[in-house]
Amino acid sequence: MTREEKSQVIQDLTAQLADTNTIYLADISGLDALATSNLRRACFKANVKLAVVKNTLLSKAMEASDKDFGELPDVLKGNTSMLIAEAANAPAKVIKEFRKKSKKPVLKGAYVEEAVYVGDDQLDALVNIKSREELIGDIITLLQSPAKNVISALQSGGGKLSGILKTLSEK
Image (cartoon, rainbow, N blue to C red; front, top):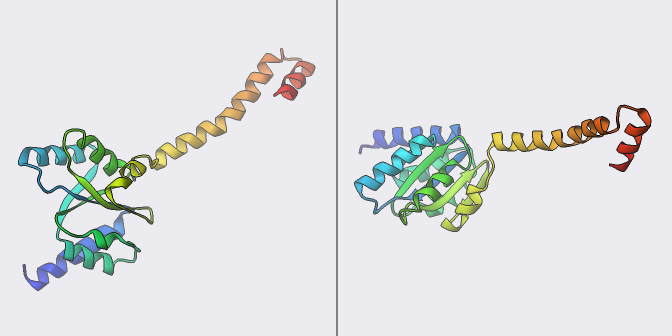
């Protein structure tokens, strides 16, 4: 690879890092062709982009990026694959599901919404991160609950002002 080609790869990686807030680094070495194909298929279905990267080039791209990757460049040893997704927990779910059949991929680290997670022991924490849509759904549910209580109180009060006041005061 020439110096110009390396420079272009670093620029491309830097642009990818700038465009996303969810980056996972994993080790998929040792997977045979069928397992690798299945992993790529699982990533595609989950809308996760999987790419094998050179550690030195990714490290230089991280340095050139405006983001603070903390300890993440330290895990760039051995075989490294980068998983990028819109949903913060999508790559973690793919890895966890795939590991039911295999010991790989091993999570090296992740950068999720300015937070850095290092080590395979962080996988469960990453799976439990809620997506934006899940959070919005939870907030809507919480907001609807008091309104439902008021409506049920009004209906159970029999429509009379004294019944409504009594029911509301009990709640």
